[in-house]
Length: 147
Image (cartoon, rainbow, N blue to C red; front, top):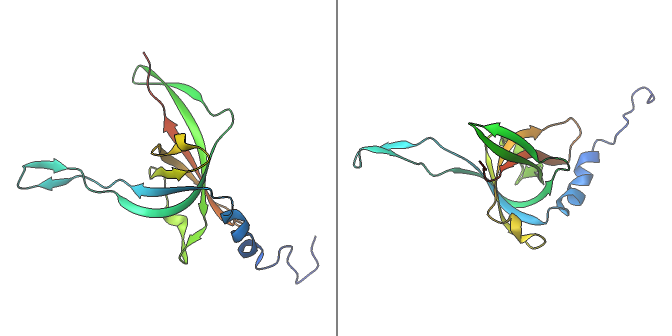
């Protein structure tokens, strides 16, 4: 129990950990949000809209242990692989809390594991907390289906 009028953590505790957390971000990637299709009058049908880019910069991607879960979707067996994607808590002074479920993470560069490059991961959950120095995203990669 802390003494009255004192705090357990220094007020700048999280800020002092930003540099350490950012040093672990060894991949590069983008986070985008799919946008609704728009009707094209000239063509007479809807065309996909360009996704909104929410973030472009360093990331860390780690596959979660025991995360390959077989499940059945529309009569097909699908393996759902879960990943934790870590990014800076703030970018250019803007908090990254705008990231939300169903946004898409795409790794654009990884010197340590080139198999990550161009692998889209769908955000399932944004992990939040009262004492954080990085933004953690729980993502999934839907592997190929089998019969």
